[in-house]
Amino acid sequence: MKILVVDDEELLVKGIRFNLQNDGYEVITGCNGMEAVTLAQSQNPDLIVLDVMMPQMDGLTACSKIREFSNVPIILLTAKADDMDKLMGFDNGADDYLTKPFNILELKARIRALLRRSGAGVQKEEVKLLTIGSISLDMDARNAYRSGQLVELTAKEFDVIEFLMRNPNRVYSREALLDTIWAYEYKSDIRTVDVHIRRLREKLENNPAEPNYIMTKWGVGYYFRK
Image 1 (cartoon, helix red, strand yellow):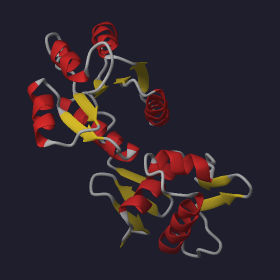
Image 2 (cartoon, helix red, strand yellow; image 1 turned 45 degrees about the vertical axis):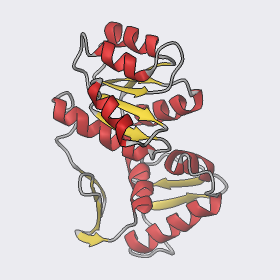
Image 3 (cartoon, one colour; image 1 turned 60 degrees about the vertical axis):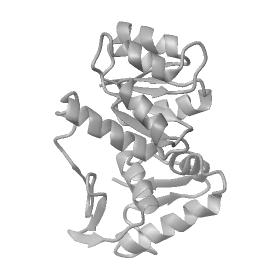
Image 4 (spheres, helix red, strand yellow; image 1 turned 90 degrees about the horizontal axis):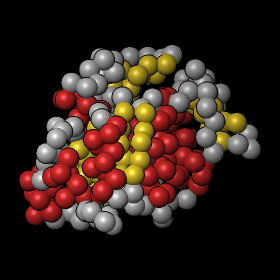
């Protein structure tokens, strides 16, 4: 599956590209509305993530021009949350609308939903349950299970365990987890990661003191053992 990401915020584009590539998507990028239209024509992406406020051509205009030749699903990103702005986005052909700052996992969930509705991601979406060992995640309902028993997780706890389980045996530093999962929430600190890992072990491990899945690589970070 190929996704086009267009935004003039370079760091944001890098973060989105990193996360989508980790999920197996092919990602192409641009930095303005004119590039969005050109790349949509030449690359034929399966979905487009498009910022509204960009130089040379804004995202609303680009969305409208893309609609002249393509029905590709489009998610608009914007710093504005007014209903009128959302209506303008939908009037110009957008399929979904996400307000900055946003959680990268919410963006990925919306991408999966749009691909599923468009039929482009049917094969990828057949499996809705992510399971490793005795731990399972229902991706649609955002429920977690240990040995078949429902475990109550907060939204952020679910985000953390989902990310680690989607990337098993790969070690992530506290800083990397903070940047990826907490994204724009700059008031968070490294201790936040430690607290969430501890709570996840208490809820998902049979023996939190000697975990089987949510592991520590001393001096480096955390990983989910497969």
